[in-house]
Amino acid sequence: MRDTELYRYLLGIEEPWKVSKVELDLANQRVDVWVDHPQDLSWPCPECGNKVSLYDHAPERVWRHLDSCQFKTFLHARPPRVNCREHGVRQVGLPWADAKARFTLLFERLAIDVLRESDILGAARILRISWDEAWHILERAVDRGLAAKEKRICPRIGVDEKSVGKGHSYMTLVCDVETATVEYIAEDRKQTSLDGYFEILSDEQKEGIEAVAMDIWDPYLASVKAHLPQAEEKIVFDRYHLMTHMGKAVDTVRKKEHRSLKEKGDETLSGSKYLWLYAEENLPEKHEERFAVLRAMQLKTARAWAIKESLRDLWSYTRRGWAHQHFKQWYFWATHSRLKPVIETARMLRRHLYNVLTYFIHPITNAVAEGLNSKIQTIKKMAYGFRNREHFKTAIYFHCGGLQLYPATH
Ligand SMILES: [Zn+2]
Image (cartoon, rainbow, N blue to C red):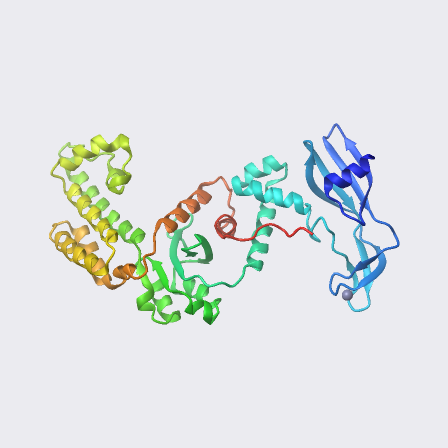
């Protein structure tokens, strides 16, 4: 077998294309492969598909392809052009790459696989391309995925805010709770942020939404009510967000108590912040001993913690009526605790109780939202070198969008 023929196989080059020349550059560890075609062929116009005879060639182009045994491999070709009666002079489609890409389709597929497992810098190193090239492949994959995304109904959605960068800067994320995918990202956390999501949905898609899990946040409430019929029945203030409020109340109690203990030289609560925030069953084993001692002390923080853990039990009921009973008892306890942050949180929950208890009609599990949240935290922390918010959004769509990212191969 001639080496040109071997390369035709290795590169997956199909008829009528043939390898005309292969150059091996040992010093630079690269292989350059030129492909060509017989002259007397007709080609389909990229617009209408009509076969037209060859008009001329565009200047030679180069695509990076999958490595051959650690050697960077480059494909060279002059793309044929046709002169269609209807569409004029056009470059014909090539089987190995998109019209303007610098990489072959197979290389892009590999790059997407690597990018899924690594940050941009790591992927760029593995693939031996620049940061910008790696980022560009990711960006193109997301554009392609969003363009090809089908309009489907998401019966259960979750709305969440994400803080971005420094200060009080936010984004709004809408996720499909069943597929655990991010469906929409908008700037800010205003009513208009969420409006944007509903505005791109068809009537059928909007009517198909059965439940919306969210935090107690008036702008989101207003948006859902403005766009969904019977919104009141569909809004669920979910456990994840409510427990976050309760956690903050416990932490406020702890801070105040810690301060007053410290004034007396008592360091009991030093470094205990996170111990009180864990769900009881999630407390790491290494902290168990110290936490048991703390809990047994007559601390305000321990009381606040016990009230928090009792609230968590609300979601273990299977019936709304029982959960309601539990809430009443819990509310009595919380509001008689003489702990101001706890009392305030309890009152807020009671004001919104109807949409806390809608959980028992739409039991949206928050495992999904929490899982997605930690994934997004990872994206945020990755040494991505995000230069702006758009990059952050694109990366979320890439990793969490459930998109079809690969280019189609011919
Ligand atoms: Zn045409």
